[in-house]
Image 1 (tube, rainbow, N blue to C red):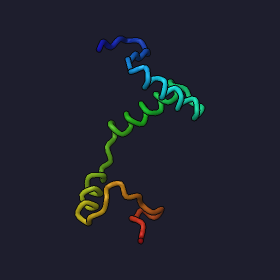
Image 2: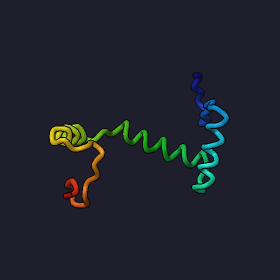
Image 3: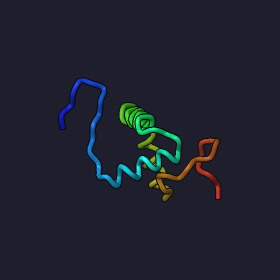
Length: 81
């Protein structure tokens, strides 16, 4: 896919995907541009600055048999059952 120097991004998606996306955005009161810019900024932030502690935390959770997506309590520790 060609990449020009302008600020324009063009992608081709299935018509049904486009309809569903626009419908979802309308329900949330957002625009495609706003949604894309937010997602792009989040992605660039995650890709550009990986957590220094994420790998250690994931390994520790795996070792202790905890799912990696287990949410932490406000104090930073896993919630107590």
